[in-house]
Length: 110
Image 1 (tube, helix red, strand yellow):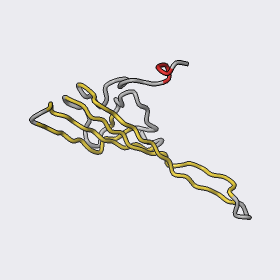
Image 2 (cartoon, rainbow, N blue to C red):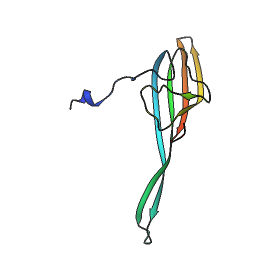
Image 3 (tube, rainbow, N blue to C red):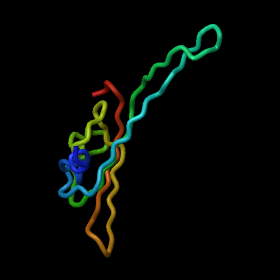
Image 4 (tube, rainbow, N blue to C red):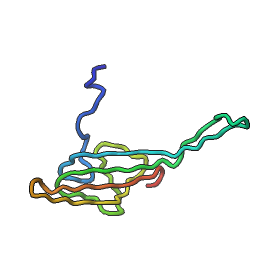
């Protein structure tokens, strides 16, 4: 397999309804519990409470709203519905207006 077949370049699709998506990120984490036997030796483990954050930044407007679901994740896949928790608008004398969106998800919550 060639290296170019194994990596992805760019963003698969626009995120959060931006006119032009600059970047997007998805972080997923899970809690872990470990069990030991009567000798105190490691016996088993289990992961639970999968959750995480999504963030995206881009130019133009966004269709995200606080508390609403972010459905366009730029080709990324979350473990549940992503709910918008923050929208930031940044204006600069040297760049176009930029918007950033952050959201959270929990496994099984839609």
